[in-house]
Length: 275
Image 1 (cartoon, rainbow, N blue to C red):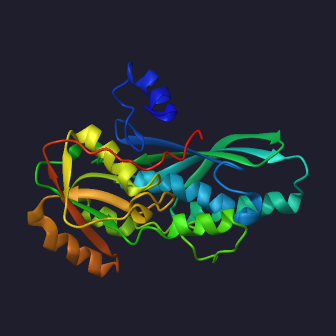
Image 2 (image 1 turned 90 degrees about the horizontal axis):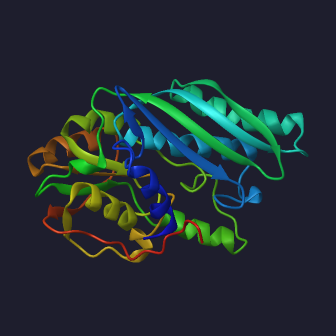
Image 3 (image 1 turned 90 degrees about the vertical axis):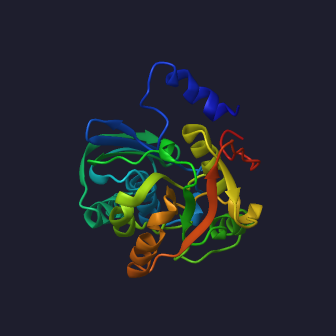
């Protein structure tokens, strides 16, 4: 068991809510993500506006994957002492741009002085039908959206001192909210791909108590690529045509790659947390 799983397990003993992208309490879903300098990003990789936008988007991605509409946001921002008013306006503009796009009201939080830029975002969302990781049914198809692998490639480029395009998904995740909300009635289980396809499949396998029979080979460059924020979900084969029709409408690429079977799945990707 890695350190992250070990730590979370200390709280699982007393809570049946922990274990998904967000915590379901009634019709509300609460999700939280940290975005820390020199852990999740280096300052010279992003503009301040891009940093704020990604910090919001990775959290909204959790809400979408659970079929929830984001309503409110709480921001905790640790700001370096040398940041100017112009810097803080740039940072704020990123939060505000994403909040406006997704009709989110920023209702508070906290700010402190720090030696580096650290951000924690809490999103409060609402749903009548939360979709969990535990809902995979026997013989369900497993599917992910878009293309995987580019974020791992772009991160390696940045770590080697290179430059990447501002259009990279590593800079700004491309969320597919309208598509997913429309297909949600056909989806049995879902989550977003933040730590890599294989790592997320292991999480879904544990929660749903299912294994997976792959239809084709998926390389580690694709399966272990984190920071993708594509959607991973399961559905009954009888609903395939309906889902494909919605995907075509929203110009979303679907990759149906496996079927749910008895057993369990374990990822052999390197965990990028706590290294």
